[in-house]
Amino acid sequence: MPREERKKQPPPDALDHAREPSRGGLGEDCPPEGDGVIKELKRDGYTVVAAANPLRGLSSDAAYIKDVLAGIKGPVVLAGHSYGGMVISNAATGNKNVKALVYVAAFAPDKGESALDLAGKFRGSTLGEALHPVPWTQPDGTKGADLYIQADKFGHQFAADVPRGTTDLMSATQRPVAQAALAEDSAEPAWKTIPSWNLVATQDLNIPAKAQAFMAERAGSHTVKVKASHAASVSRPDKVTDLIEEAARTVR
Image (cartoon, rainbow, N blue to C red; front, side, top):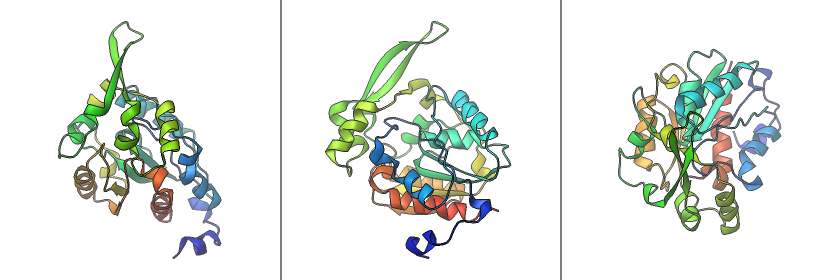
């Protein structure tokens, strides 16, 4: 059914809680132009929660999102982009309210896999050479490193199909991910027990499309391939919204 027709039909009450709570990963905090998915979901009658992913460590990030989920009543469609896929795979485990998972150009790990493992599984990622590590001191006094994408490489690396003015703003406001978070292994993932949907971005330079397709097939996801960069939610919010709403229509 065309989206124009679906908008005329209010979503069932059971679908009133479609969520996109995790947008973690390098350069994830987008300017208003990147909020197209949220705007479309709200316009179509869904309640949306876009929780802030701490980006400090996989287990702690997942625990934080798990607590956010605990405060939400009703069925949840849980979506994540990039490293956010690692987080939702761990945060949704054991939560009976999470009825569907949506991966958008994201990692969908198996137990014992890290984001670094999966990013290097297939050729095609140029992220490593675009990164700028910044040392920081953790609360216990040990040293860590925050990873940023270099400003002069951000547009090409992260969002080659997004206008320059937007990518300049995205670069300036990017939130770094701790290097340790990308190296931390996943626990048993929720996609083994919760139905999943997956958008494979075919022009992604962060997570190779072959890696995305491999993870989607392994998870048995309902999969769409979209000609888009890693910033698919910015350049193709229509496709991302359609996929989340497709997942939401299965919620009972």
